[in-house]
Length: 82
Image (cartoon, rainbow, N blue to C red; front, side, top):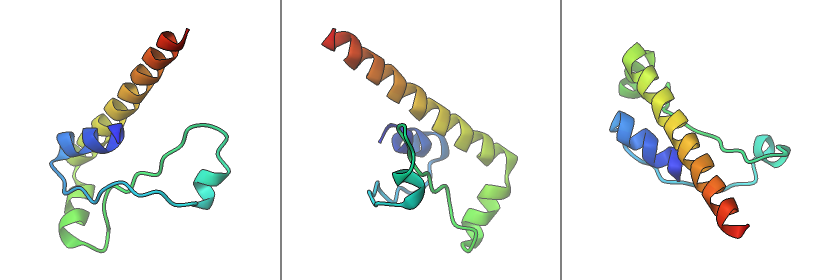
């Protein structure tokens, strides 16, 4: 949810929500893992965005910011448990 909200904030993209599924790429991971769908190449508008260097930078900032928030919240939770 942190990555999702950060991506929306950075890109102003339409949210399609967060879904859970037993995907093979996530099931075999031995650590925290997410799959981020950033757009559809079959959608002309989204494809134009995905080709844009500024949009790519916004995506990278959104993903990185969301991961940083997750790690910060996780560290704070661990500290509170100790």
